[in-house]
Length: 510
Image (cartoon, rainbow, N blue to C red; front, side, top):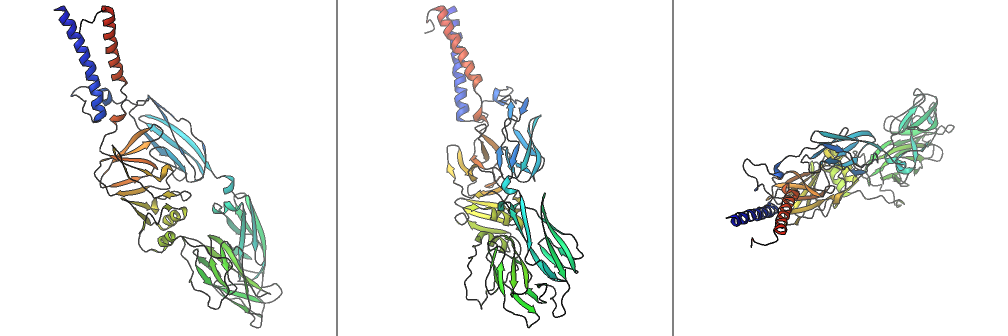
């Protein structure tokens, strides 16, 4: 009887060990809560609240357009509380669900990370690097002498030239009773006298003087829509129509010039202050080349006038796209070709513009800018998916978006990588042709685990974070269970068995 009892005890211990092994195998094979027993709290079913959260290592100073991954440290490590990120000012910093921070504006703000009732904060300063900051400026006029009622355009050069895309310049006149200046650099004579035109960008300034004279009796300037000026001693007034031109890259506009008195030379020369922005032919045909502002000087050898030219991809163009039939001479500076996608976004009357993925392999900064300024949506149709980029959601135009998605089948479901792990400039909607899956996961490179995002229905995904995505029907929450409890329990049972055998020095249970 005693021997039988001992055998029963050993058999029970062996059965417990086998049960633990079977439970581990079952959980690995089917990660649903099949091990849960009514009224019994299993280790994987218990909530483990976060006791603390620390910021971890991060960069407190970021450059405009850059990004970084925040990796807060949550204790205990097996805490079931997920981390939530919040930006105090999304105009300076944006943050994804997985903690990818992107600098979209200049300033200082805070990112808060919360896990359960525990929080930590990241204070981050966003600034521009030296290539984005204006250090010097030169301000000039094609003619520093104009007549009352006539206008010239200011030409501004900034250094370094790379800062021109980030510079915010204001123009002022020291005496608006003599001459005024608008934000586009158009200086207009009001009354005889002298005024100083000042350009200001941060702490950097540049100045130039303009002298306004009364119109001579021999000729008068023209009215609205023309630019005119003359030599201080010639008595001649050059008039150009139009005086202000807004073009899109690649567009053209023909200038018409005249001079008073009519006895003066009516033969004109045309010169662009910046041929990288706009060129002009000997017959006065302006061709827009690159975005920015410049001026065209029109002269008959004695008097001259200036025409302001603004080249803007998003603004409505004043171009008539007409060619100068009288001109047979080629333009030395060939205009650049405008992006057909940008052109389609600007010209389309529909709110949605559709292209194939082969036509738009990359959503460039120019395309993002066109979407943001027009508020339209770009639809990119790929193999098994359609990607939608809404202009209303574009936060940055300094980065690009890769539109290629490769849908790969795995044992768990379908995987794909969005934008090759870079920082997204905006939220992206992805419509997939498959709808047989119910759960969406994002791979967290910090924890090396799949992070559950939301349910997947109707084949639609809204993603604001670049990285690896998984569509599956499995509940991967249980796939990451720490089985230390079971392993330790099994080891204890085995050790007890071995100790018993050693102490008894016999293998009676066989």
